[in-house]
Length: 251
Image (cartoon, rainbow, N blue to C red; front, top):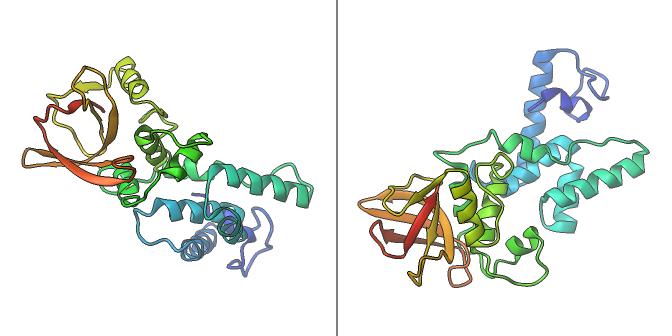
């Protein structure tokens, strides 16, 4: 994070409120912290794992707090797409070629981790969500589709690891399996998974994966998961590690 980006915010009371106006590094950091705290408060961030609202706060930090109220009013929160829309609108309004960084959230969150794996915290924050529309519309579908793989991709995106080849973007379980195998990151069902691994299932036990989720933890011979599209809902579930339904893991 670059505290000098806060030169133009209201907490700067000593230097010109222009880009790079603060020349004192210590004061720049102080103002940056105050500005970030204000954004986190305005975005109503509930916890360190609340990446949905943290994302809103971070983009507000980059653009100015006006983005937060704008995004809530027009889009019910942050998305990469609406961050670009806001930037384009401000560039037109201010007659400038540059306004902030519409990819700022992704740049920051790739270095942000909670516990063992932030993707798990993101997934846990979604438990109870039904229908999956927020996930498959994010992916680009205009009508409902099976969304278990899309949910995994969405969580990876929200945790900032979709773009660094930690987890692929995939809407079909078989595509996810193929990606992990191609990149030598596939483990068969004999593997004992770790928090944040991707778990693939074969309900029909016909040698083809047809469902996918995120490993939350392993305890007492059981793997605990968070899965999208489990009876059309995000659910926490558990299985014996020896379950015949487990197909393999992406690591």
